[in-house]
Image (cartoon, rainbow, N blue to C red):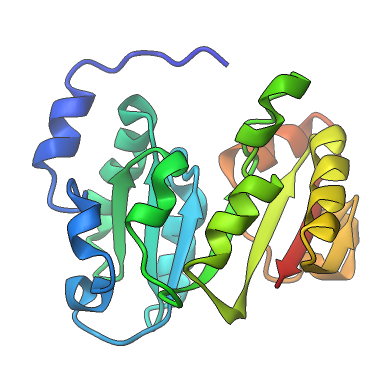
Length: 211
């Protein structure tokens, strides 16, 4: 997917009060950023923010952080938050490759991965957010009582993820190749991509993984 450049997006990310620009400084103390001890849920690859913004609206007793590395995409999520000013939602313009630098052990209660880049070439498999390499990273800051929830319309990526999760010794649950026609669809919040792909007739795959 080719990203459209949005003039001034990077500068806006630096100046906006809902974007944390030095997240590593808050490692181990995100509760201080939010001013409470509520559970912390994160979305890696938050895109334009529809999913995590709706979650934050519905669950004021949970803190949310949306992580996106592209300013030209994240600015749309930030614009939504500027209108709503939800006290339990912040954003990071950050590359997930360095995710361990910003969260301490047992600091995160849940991780959402929605329609992540499939990195289709085999040599790039380690870059996939459901690879064993990333699962090992998540284990360093995800509470044992927490989990990773993953959605995609890419069946090849989903099959790869199932295999990687099992090989990593994690436990799978709520696995479906057709989310919208499954029992797991109750309470599902659609992302922008999910709505688009569903309208095209693409079934949505979903899984939950615990270690």
